[in-house]
Length: 301
Image (cartoon, rainbow, N blue to C red; front, side, top):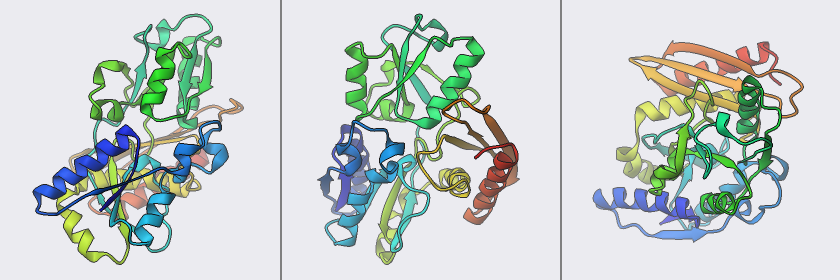
């Protein structure tokens, strides 16, 4: 039994995992659930407890034996899982980039005077602020945008925003890739730790499930996101802090980039990078810790 949120994207992700497990001979069904993060839409995540609100109810279902596994967008998963739970599998990553979605503009530079850009993420706020500063666009307003992917697109289409910024992966998974007007390269908008990757959570005592899920795991992705998540963990562990981290392999070497910003604009964006040979999760974690130290040395809070 797979515990999943009931948004269209979450259900797609759960159905995707179900299909893969079925091919490996497992009998799988879904348990749809509504989380606190889905219910509270009038406040920003950073003010109501962070993205962990999207996984708590699913963990309760695992703990009580109502479900065996929970499928998550990895960027929504807290850096440290509660005692008794484990990340059993990280699947191959989709496009990790952020995407500009607009009915009017194909780039940030084309936004009209006084435009409103919607995002739910403090990370995107600080990176957009840096982009607009480079463009000399102090007129653009960055406004909060909550709700599932379909709700956010509806608010855009109703004219509440001139553009919104979403994860490219979610749009592509739902067959909405044509809504992407531009995909930001990481050098412009560094992704969130784990963005585009799916993680599967189980109770830590379920060795049988870890074995069953092993064929779905993608080691290169797991090492990259482990390094990214280690940056967040070392910086305080909150999914809601204005922090970006993205890692890519070149051969055996993993390059990890990170950025931290102040949403109030009181200090400049801080960036850090490190490269190391990474072959296991311990090495990935050490790389992330090193990059976090460089961020702090640069003034990140």
